[in-house]
Length: 110
Ligand SMILES: [Zn+2]
Image 1 (cartoon, helix red, strand yellow):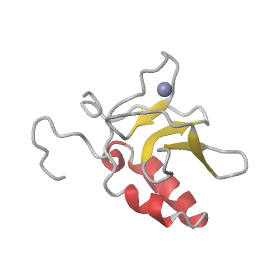
Image 2: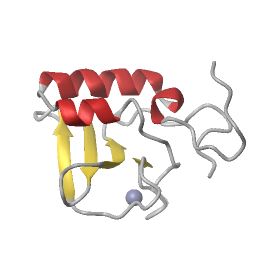
Image 3: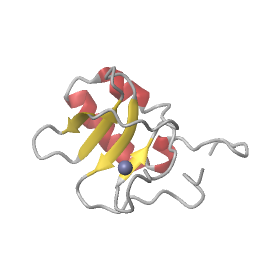
Image 4: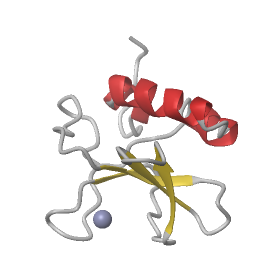
């Protein structure tokens, strides 16, 4: 595993490797290559704190809600990607299937 310097934010794909594989596969299936490529470098900034029950995982330190969502897959969505108003950057990932979304210890504690 790569050394991480103190204070560096974990990569989303390191915190949630299986979920990342799943999402990237879905993005390829939808031909959303621009979003798929972002998952190589997305950071994990912890759970969204907007409400105690929010299940979104923040991938953008600014976490501004734009209201634009990409549903994966489009029928019976499992994930919602919360994207910026330009539809370019992934801001958060919402997990809709009720699975546990805890990263490894020490990751995402910003
Ligand atoms: Zn939230």
